[in-house]
Length: 167
Image (cartoon, rainbow, N blue to C red):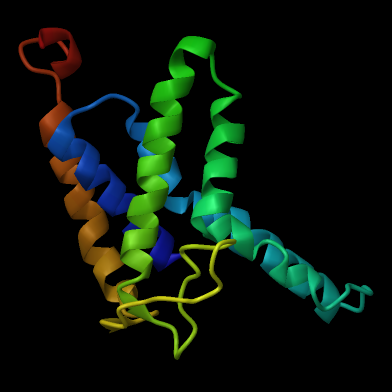
């Protein structure tokens, strides 16, 4: 959970800096790779642990959704649920959030198992290994309230009108 909070906080900080629209799409994009790849995998693993006959490959079948090719697919699908005039903005912000997610993830060290960023063209993995995969836990507790305060300060109403109305 702390990792998801860290991802969401960074998305919120990016949108605070740009003051652009579609903040919710950017923040959602920062957690979409984990929701698409990790949540189903954890669910199938739990089913297998409880005695349900789950083929051992199934929990790994969703890993492609944590790679650029799967991310593009998920962003396209999610954007299709929005009105036509909003789809491009939603898609681009989801995609930006997802790539911000990957940028943060590649800074971690996963004990030799990195991210296949060029899949399906290459199965080589990559990561910088600058910090452990659980190193974001203490940062989540610091970064989340900071991101919320910065976002609020950048978007608070001024003089009775919302910031977006005055620009």
